[in-house]
Amino acid sequence: MPDQYDVIIAGAGMAGSLAAAVAAKKGLKVLLLDRNKEQEVGKKTNWGWVCGDAVADAHLQFIKSKLGLTFDYPELDVKVDGVLVISPDLEYKIPFEGAGYVLNRPAFEYKLMQEARRNGAEYMPEFEVEGPIMENNYITGIFGKDREKQHREIRAKIVIDALGVATTLRRKLPDNPYIDKVVDVADLESTGRYIYDFELDHSDERFYDPKNALIHLNQEWAPGGYGWVFPKKGTRVNIGIGVQKESLEIRNKKLGKNDTLHTLMDEYVKHNPAIKNPRLYNENNNGKGYWSVAVRRQLDCMVFNGYIGAGDSMAMPNPISAGGIGPALVSGILAGDAAARALNDGGPSTESLWQYNLDFNEAYGKKTAGLEVFRTYLQSLNNDTINYGMRMFLTAKEAEELSYGMIPELSLASKAKLVLKGASNIRAFQNLLYVVKKMNTLNGIYEHYPSNIKEFAAWRERVAAEMEEAKQKFKPNPV
Ligand SMILES: Cc1cc2nc3c(=O)[nH]c(=O)nc-3n(C[C@H](O)[C@H](O)[C@H](O)COP(=O)(O)OP(=O)(O)OC[C@H]3O[C@@H](n4cnc5c(N)ncnc54)[C@H](O)[C@@H]3O)c2cc1C
Image (cartoon, rainbow, N blue to C red; front, side, top):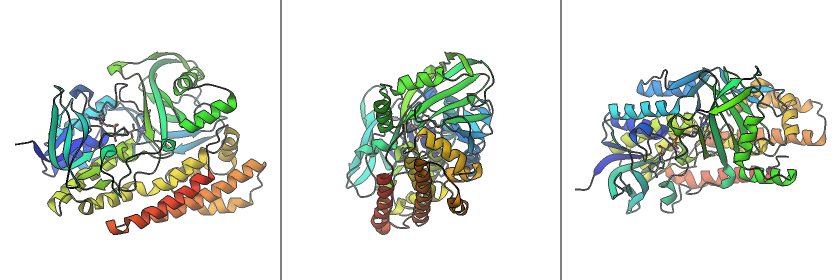
């Protein structure tokens, strides 16, 4: 008899382990697969658990409310009051996303996998998933290589894809009218980060703040993205940058430079005056790594016959902060729930899994299309305009509201009476008003995410048309 499970969860990262924990808790026969050795569960690539590792407390509270699972040291490395976004001229700071933690990522991932096991999931490390098994237009399992490098096929009624941004499952789905198989390169950030021990040269909270996660907006240092300095225990730091490919190319051409992600990362560390004598902290070979992160709205639909996607495999990270841990945790829990619900009632068809789209939309996703427009707008501004805009266009409170996808409409409109200097600044402000309006429209469309499969095509066309208009208006223009 071939192996047969209720649910296979491919990828034991944040999303996968939680999906397994929930599905097993609901009584399903669950297999959780990951390519890593057990002690390295959740490691993204050979480069390690590449991430800034900052997560808002609200997301951990969501896990507690759904699973009763709580966290402490060592998996929570340090507590931070919040994330502060700093302007290119370093003059302005805007709070973002509220209080949270910088994680000890290997310890956190291990704890989630153990929770899945504790609830009854079977965990199989060192399994490389190569693709989905398809029968009669249903996903009915996965194939891949086990730890002996033997080809294996394993069957299940539902497969949850939690393989992260480079998923071999989503990309090999049959052509279908629901799930995009490819993410546009303009919606990806190339990212890299170091974990360093260092000596504090002098206190300068614009560059290192033991109580806050710092984000530097700067189109020359990190074109189309940003740099970050996130504190860890003692004088240890997670420091890195993300760049958009096209923005980097434009910036290099205009400045006559030949920078890459790697050279920009090293410059970013070198130019940080608070950090002296950085030494790679390389426990678990996790000190230095590169990876990509999608910064768009989550895929329009995330279910197909026998298939549910969660976390980075569905492009869930926040379009402006690239924060993907929160949505991965939330979607993992919802995906486990959705699998159990469908198998108890209706089976694994796209129709019967559909409610998952609505659940994620409600819990997290309905703001992300608007934020994708805001990200595209930000990428069209140079440092001078960002400086001016952060000073003149928005109060800190309004900016924080925007970061949550809320629309500070009235006060912005009243600011139309502001006396603004400089043609490009006036244009940027007018464009901001356009963005806010567009965010409002998109938030409205997502408030009415289709409750059934039949309305999906028309809804999706509306989203695509709104998004296309904004993307035509704002082109990368970093310097
Ligand atoms: C440099 C960088 C910095 C970031 N900083 C932050 C931050 O500070 N805060 C934040 O919230 N988010 C951040 N993110 C995003 C965040 O890391 C991700 O959103 C999050 O890890 C997504 O979790 P996941 O479970 O969906 O996928 P992943 O964490 O990618 O987990 C996928 C799992 O599947 C395994 N896998 C993949 N392919 C296969 C295969 N073929 N066979 C078997 N196993 C496989 C992987 O090894 C891994 O264990 C950052 C991302 C990057 C790249």
